[in-house]
Image 1: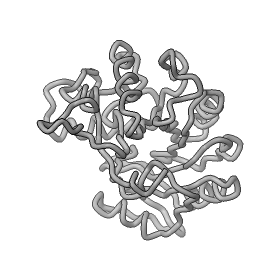
Image 2: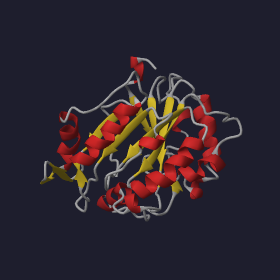
Image 3: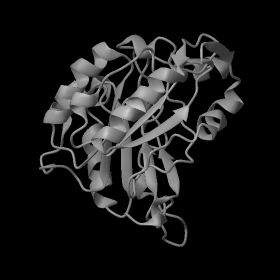
Length: 260
């Protein structure tokens, strides 16, 4: 990867999701929909008007999503939702056609990936990065062994919202990056800085890149609990200065995710 991959685009071919584990309790999709008084329930999965965005062109013939962009895919849903099974093959086709972009999605449903892959996937499309999300030790122990068995060229692990100390040291082979962060929102559960530091240690010892993305709204450091406003959660994590980068990665560090 070159430094030209530090620009990004969003692509949400469908919207809406269903809760499946503890990390979903205060899902930001539900929260944001509620803020805008969405007429359709957040649990209703539906295709969006942006479904074919990667192939759309401007009047001058250029793609609306320019080449060499990281395309954050399905961040208001889950790319592996069963409800999206009829639509996903066309998305794989668009990803394959846009080999000039890097598509990145993460999922809490990694146990569905094998059954959702396209016929020509082989050992993975070189321009697709898959992130496996875990929020506690139980989900790490369940999802990460499955993730390790799957043919994916570029793998990341997202420990967020981090709800407890998590040991993933046995599952870091083949992982390019681990990102971690707390939970945002008024009902956020506690994230402890000691958990973050120990996760970083695991990554450093395994030679895997690590990124502390956001503190979350309820954060404990040195025994003291802080309530951190949303606008400061990213910057406070960055100020900690504990990111551990190795080489070049497809996910730029300046992207403003809501991990929870």
